[in-house]
Length: 214
Image (cartoon, rainbow, N blue to C red; front, side, top):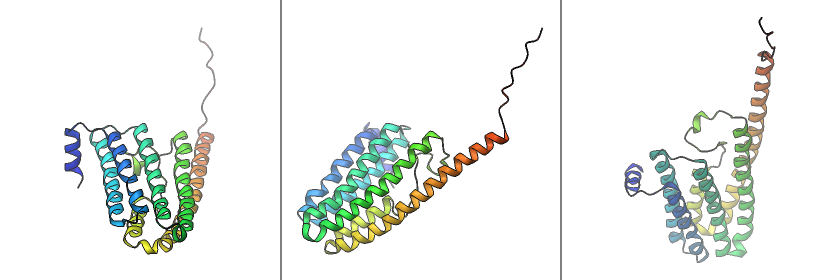
């Protein structure tokens, strides 16, 4: 579905990182509309942000320009955008929404850190990632990921009076994600290192030095 737009952007010589920055700015424009309780206007910018977020990756792959720097920029701005949306609802109605927003942001820290922290040792030990060959860093799956996050953001805007209930529900699901990611990531790294150690023990490197021939 994004292919025609990707071709047009490529023709206009738009760079993926430029699109990432524009998408972030567009997404952050939702915050003042949320604070003003203009829900549908905020929803428009949230959806547009997600479209642009999909476009930057598709454009990078089309241009064969997937880089670590671009992936780093994309994930940093994505998490800032995710954190800004609950803040917007807290600003809209502090008495009703602030606590729920704070709980959700706490869970976001857990899901984000468990997601990103896994990439560091995974990269260091060169952990295989066949299902994410086009990504610039390692992914660790969870119950609540990008699609589920946006689904709840849309629900927040469609039924703003139920923001606390929806936020607590999302926070509960996010807590499950934190547990499964930490448990799964820890065991994945531990088992991979154990397998490497076992392979090294069963196939020792021959370090003997051959005597010089006369």
